[in-house]
Length: 65
Image 1: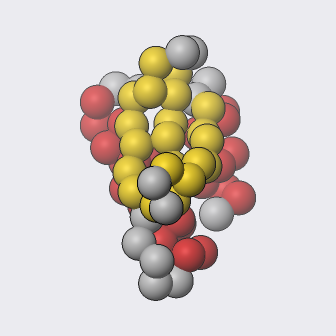
Image 2 (image 1 turned 90 degrees about the horizontal axis):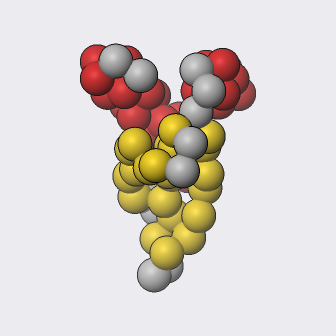
């Protein structure tokens, strides 16, 4: 997961992990604008985070971030 976080940070993005209404959420921001976010499942937290973060980063690459 560290390499995924470094990849986002090297692109100038900010990654934030929060909890909202009992759900864990990953938010990726560029400046003050949230450019991607997703809610995580409760199964295996580490696996969910890595898979979700990878999917968000791939989606942002496709969008040109």
